[in-house]
Length: 179
Image 1 (cartoon, rainbow, N blue to C red):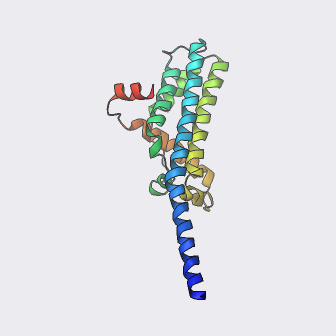
Image 2 (cartoon, one colour; image 1 turned 90 degrees about the horizontal axis):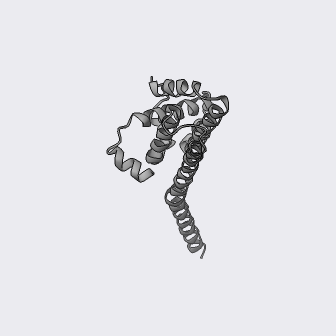
Image 3 (cartoon, rainbow, N blue to C red; image 1 turned 90 degrees about the vertical axis):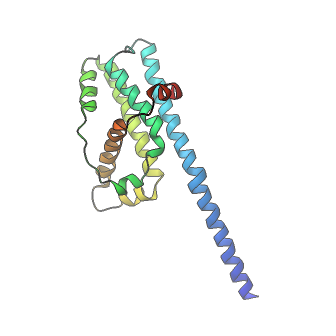
């Protein structure tokens, strides 16, 4: 009888681990991705509302750069994983897009500049949260002896810049899909 109880306990443990694996890798992953995209849509709507209220012109470079960054993140959010932190060490990519962003902000009134920088900051936080919370790899990196907050901050910045360099297959289709 004791042998049967041990076999039953092992089978129950395996079934529970299998159910946990399914929940983690199928349900939770897609829920996290949906939550990230919802946050990105919310930020893009906030940016659009600013332009609609005439706080910034739709044609202004700062508006266009931030909207393009949000659209790229929406289109490629599924590629942001904690495994990226392990496979590709953080490196800075020389990117004139960041410089254009900074220059375009300089042309705006302080209040508008602050609002756009806040939207960009919340974009970065949403991406960091998505990567860190959703990945055991990222959590392990957080406990590494090297400065983990700097590793993650550098990786997020590098990932966003790298996503900007990925050519879109069909820009019209992408814009129509994302809105």
